[in-house]
Picture (spheres, rainbow, N blue to C red):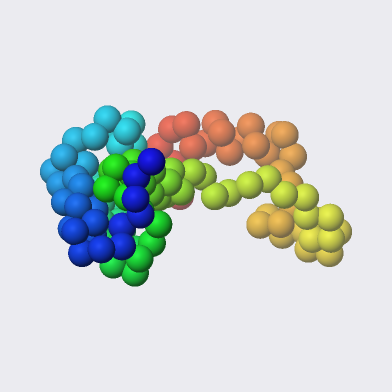
Length: 124
């Protein structure tokens, strides 16, 4: 079992265990995300800075766990960026009170017409 970083030597070993930005940008866990390299680099730098602050604040981090913690934080951040935020809802009051296009569900015929129109050039 590893000791929790508390002495200056332990802190230094935790800091040394932080992978380089270049190494992290090439990590296989991040290759499946369609993100521009400079945005990925920025996220990695921000997460490294956050981890450094956690280490200096005396967080329960060991040198052995530093790379895994960092990779999981970056992966969670990327997943939150690429997870669709729109969800289906039921507008039980808005349908009756407000019948404008933004609030009322569309009829199947209207959806078909929209699909046919947007499938080609149009004058929108």
